[in-house]
Image 1: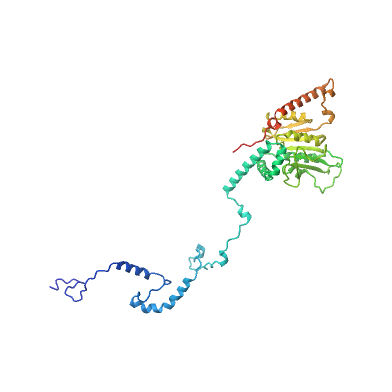
Image 2: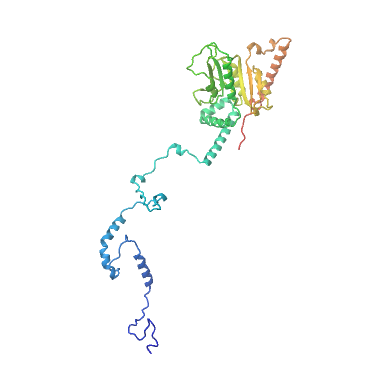
Length: 400
């Protein structure tokens, strides 16, 4: 019978059969926990003798001394490990690379402030947005200067001097897109006149220019004779003196003044230039001031944008300037953007206008009668509207 029920590993007749003892509740969890604890690194606190198996007691005693060293090291603060770059790893040949050195204690201090040049560096998007803001600011200041009087403009710049710099910064950007700058034409013309010895001279051997609304005084920079040069009479090497006036002093060549009242003696200038400078609602006052400071037969040069003239040719403007006592010499409208005018100041006898002094007959009578009619018409218009509202329209850029 015993052979019948014999199965390998199961012998019912054997005395070695062990009784089955069911596992205690929670034994599986305790076993898993113990296995996990056995996998911990050597730095962790070793288990006590009671918790260790009997066969590992002797080995644990031998390793006790070695376990104290990692414990001490673990108690000390360790520097953070730095990530190794690809170049820090060993190459394919197996050559080891030097490990990065630990950062010094001073590295924990805050970094020094960046240089100003780095702080001001903008991204392309920021530069684009800044350009838009600067353009909008320029257009606003430009419109303001064209729609107020020169006296108000002087007060405005005194209160906000940064506006002058902002305006001229925007103006320089505008000039870069122009096919031609009128001031360069004036510079070339004066240089040619000097070369051909056609410039008039005062008794001191100098030729005097007044640049009204000069901006950066580029005309004076190119034309004026340095102060260190000595006058050499009425010849080719005579000095050229340029007085440059504007609302603020952008450089040493500029004198601050309202161009309707500049600190210049009567009849002391040979030339007065308004290059895109008839701004404000009272620009005819500027022309009257030019007449005061010009010598007899002195010349008045004016350049303005074509779009400011209602007739695109400036004939009404010419009539208005003539009515102030100037003689019209030339109008040049060849440029697509600008018109240049030339006038000169005649002797006082030629512009005397009282009716009792008019000849009874002749051509002069008709000319002076027409001159008086034009002046009367101008005065009537000025009583109704300022010249900045009808004679020259403000140069206002489109809002974007």
